[in-house]
Image (tube, rainbow, N blue to C red; front, side, top):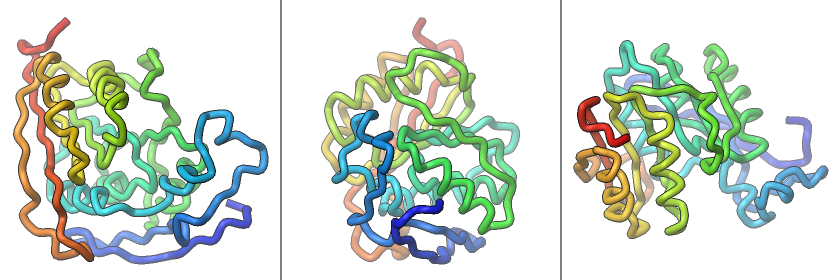
Length: 224
């Protein structure tokens, strides 16, 4: 990460472990000398959003801290800094992290090193990508993914392409008003859903107004 962007280092207590992270100093940072992000449609205003730990990511990380992932292949979608992936990696879970931003992989590798952990399997992907090179997963997680209505169909289809027949999906939404819309799309793929409030968000600076969206499907419910 040899660039003029400013970063910060912090240690977060998640469950019973400390997670060390390097993030952008703030959302004013920007560095795209070769125009790689611009070619991907990432503006200077949205460029730094990947590099901050957002409340939804913290909620998801805490939810996953004591989640049983034994024997499960796990996928984090739109990971950004990848705090939930770092937590699961610390537990030796079989975790794959994905994002679209060109700098995500560099930060994820650096943060795995800060935690004396093995490198996390990372793939740069576009939700519209029709390929299946990632394979299928038993558990798919993500946080604060529903920025626009157009993302709902893309996200649901991306999940479906990479979901094993018996799959659980956990999405944390901060209250952007689209949780019911994604639930309707997921129902068409055979998922039942529940929306719950996190039990405790005392680790956040402000009250959390969103939900944890839980989706579950058995193999016989899969829609072809």
